[in-house]
Amino acid sequence: MGITLIETRTWEKMNERFADFIDRLNKEMGTDENFDEWLDNGDVCRLLNVSKRTLQTYRDTGKLPFSQINHKVFYKQKDVETFLNERKSNAPVD
Image (cartoon, rainbow, N blue to C red; front, side, top):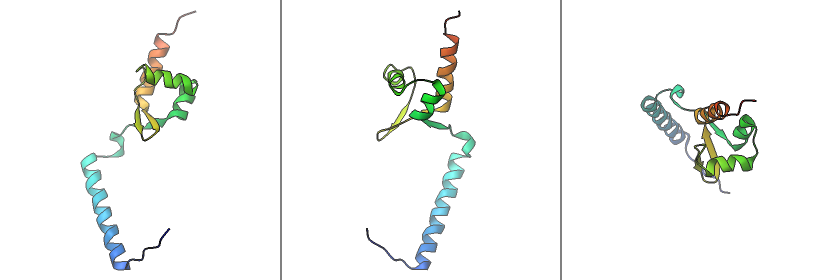
């Protein structure tokens, strides 16, 4: 691992530019309220009370939408809630 030294003035200028970029991005994208919360496999397994293998089956059969970044799988909270509500409404009545 190497160490890179830069002048304080350069560092401050980089930080200002980065802060400006974030401000522009926030203005374009809106507030955090516009974004869905994402859940990982562990979160969804606990919410649905299923095993990792069952969750894999839900993905494979298209029953539960997901996104994948590299090898990590994520689910929108709204999609999981919809899936859970559909399962409850289709559950057999005793």
